[in-house]
Amino acid sequence: MILRGIKVKQEYSTLKQIIRDRRAVKKGYLNKEVTEEVVKELLEDAIWAPTHGNRQPWRFIFVGQDQLPAFAKKVAQTYSADLQQNRENYLNEPNAILVVTMEAPEMEKQWDENFGATACMLQNFWLLAWEKKLGVVWKTNPHIYDPKVKEILHIPDNEKIIGFIHLGYFEEQPAKKDRISVVEKFTTFKA
Image (cartoon, rainbow, N blue to C red; front, side, top):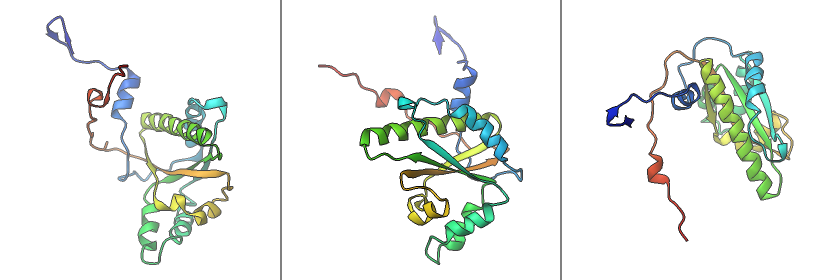
């Protein structure tokens, strides 16, 4: 930033810094358990996201370290035989998985509002987890669309799986990937 011709180092508030530092942590998790208590604690704050009509359309299913191998095997079995071992290994990489669902109303407007609210809540969760060096990545692999996975998780017909949130503590921060400047994606309406 330049102030009266003097170059000044840009300072960020804590919130701005967390937003800019946050990364998807996809692997390299430490061998440290992600507990249900920690996830619930983070969610208690994350759910203060904006939600149209205060619908709070989200629901959570926690798969902890002790249940992860059996869960991974069941979900992997929804794939073709040649992919099952790969998918089972993949689902066993994180220390825990948080399955996030949302109410999926038939009215398109409400569906969009519910998805937006759930995405905002997940961003809150991600930022709060980042503060604790708990890595998060929001996964939308093909299995989240498979009706057999909904059966495994006992998810009712009026809910949609939004994602499997892979969780694990980390030491090494993933590399930063720059963003395209807002200037390149911003226009002003002129009548």
